Image 1 (cartoon, helix red, strand yellow):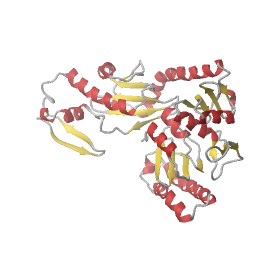
Image 2 (image 1 turned 180 degrees about the vertical axis):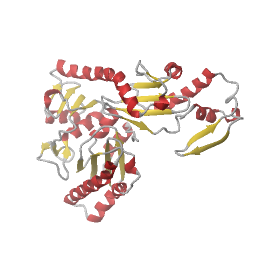
Image 3 (image 1 turned 90 degrees about the vertical axis):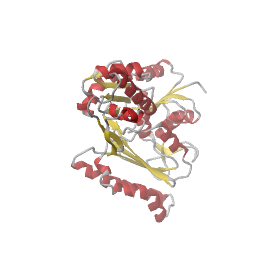
Image 4 (image 1 turned 30 degrees about the vertical axis):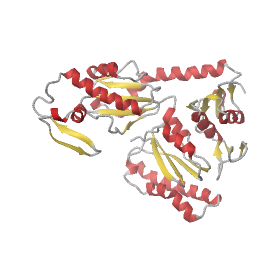
Length: 381
């Protein structure tokens, strides 16, 4: 199960002022015997983080306290049975958080005065990101997809999981033939209808009410700038298109009974529909880089300086090309040899600063110019 990364999550990490900040990123296994390696890998990475904290002068008891939340995670056997492509985990004197991500990530430990956020930025606003809404009268699923895969997002209370649930909440008095309604499992309503079901309403009116409630919830959960793919029978998806306020619905639909489709099936069919849309957006940014050489940048010092000043409109970052060093406010911009306690990944810092100031971040292994980072400025200095 994916843990959705919202813009507010990244903004909160950027505002953490009391370090040291610990970032642990690692690949994960979704199923099978390989899931047993997850807690072992995390414990090893936490030992590495503990050594870095010691290098910064933190006493052993304080190190144990700071890392205790993540240590507990390593002991949670149930947690490791529900993984996605990678795990990003964070600890600081004020708390602990982790995210199961739908994008692959290399193993990495960073202990510094700020967090390593490229994995979260990629998950929250990557140029290959899209959402998928699988609709039926019996089941509503929201999935968050990327080029490499897709994962189901837990449905919170604003979104009804079925037609029965939507109508049960809206008007209990009309449910005279309903009995035994309960909240079970994840806290959702299950309902059994007898006879004619909900009286005095035609089918289209009931479906419209149901889909309006779904759309209200979806609009609170998704980024409206990212494509939304619909899956389901035409009766539902066509009506949803008429009702929905989502501005970037993909024009084509995955047709068929969405209840029977696995996430992998939905992903392969959705990617065929959404890839051209996403590619058009990415191509527009690359064209801007090529066509305005005065605003194009490939030097890390220049890019990071401009990012800290809020002058970057678009940045491309290679997630596997880490450049370690120091930067304000901890010191002057300086590239150092290798990772270590107190050192930041400067490409990650540049991406975070661009994101903070509403720029577009492309996390990709095809960076213009072939370096670890490239950028397109908003204006000349």
